[in-house]
Amino acid sequence: MIENKGSRHILQGSQIESFKWISDDFMILKMLVAIYDASRKEAEK
Image (tube, rainbow, N blue to C red):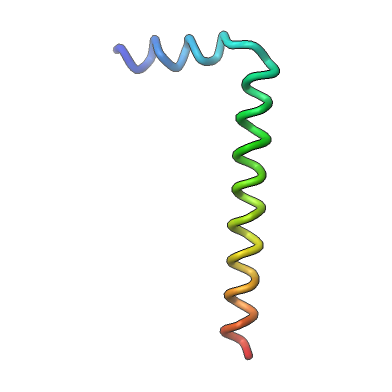
């Protein structure tokens, strides 16, 4: 029950704050995809 209250509190935070989190996650995802692509190309050689 405590976790639900916590996540609800985060959702009520400022839009700018949540957008910053989303963009950070997106940057991490893009980095992971780039690393994955690079390693796959290395394996194909």
